[in-house]
Amino acid sequence: MQVLTLVLLSAVLAAASNSFRSGGLPWQGSQPESHIYRDIDWLSVEVAGPLQEDASTIFLEARPIEQFERRRVFGALSLPADDLVASWASIRDFLDPSMTLIVYADDPNLTVRTVEFLSARGLRTQALGGGWDAWTNARLPEERGR
Amino acid sequence: MTLAPEATGNANNVTRSWRQRAWLVLLFGLRVGMAAVFIGAAVPKILSPDIFAGNVFNYQMLPAWGVNTLAIGLPWLEFIIGICLLLGLWTRANALIMSVLMVVFVIAFASATARGLNISCGCFEVGQDHGASSLILVLLRDFAFLVAAVLLVRYPNAPSLLSFLPRRP
Image (cartoon, rainbow over all chains, first blue to last red; front, side, top):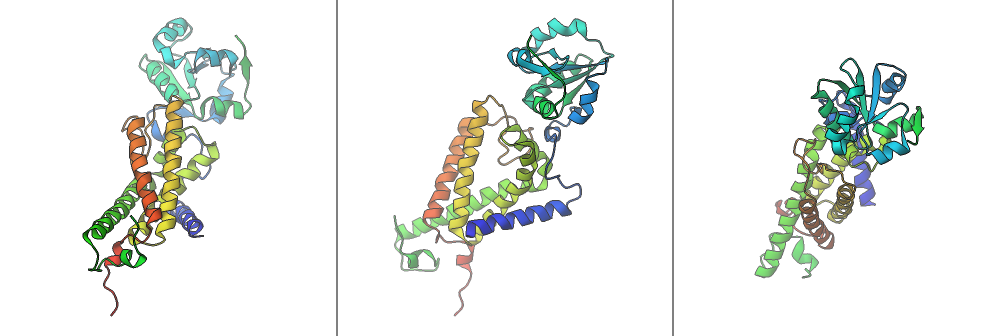
């Protein structure tokens, strides 16, 4: 009973403080990674989804190649973050600075590493908030196989 | 060591042996130490719930709807049980929650490490500026905290700050 009381008291205080705080956190937030990696330009899946049909936008998958070959964003290229230098060499000819690159992965650390790698090479690069899970949950176009 | 109830609730009792006194001092230290740990861990998270949400997210264990909920609620639970423990209110319940939280924290961080996530544990600081946490250090530290919390569950009548208030005549 005391445990329950303490938990409920904490919940009430948490809700009250969050309500009265200016810019309180939404209870069901999205893209929490954007709070940690503030230097990265994160796009929500709602914004990124339509860009998949934009010819000047390319999606880059930073997950390992095995996962890319199973399922990926429709039209995406593979740029595995675990070996960026080698994978970069294989796709650099397809990219130019006029394009917008949107990087995604499962792990935001992979996304951030890849975005920083590409940005350092002068490419306009953004990151997909929520990563691959957000894309599939939104039921956006994907493709499978090699 | 077991203590008679009457020997644990009154810090002014002068009839105790030196062993009992040392034990009470130890329990008081554990109480104050654990309260400080939880209050100290809670404050930066309460002040920056948005950044703490990023730490929670990095564990990749919760669904999207759970990340902010935990980031808003957990720090206040840590704060409340820290304050109550310091004051000696509902010690057993507080220590029980602390024990459960420690087990959960250990499992979460070990799981994240096993999945190859190189993250900051978000235990006492928020954000990623402090770099990745060492699994061994986190496990050793949390195990020590778990032992302290279990001792407080076992001996809830350990002296608290309220024990030192002057008694009514």
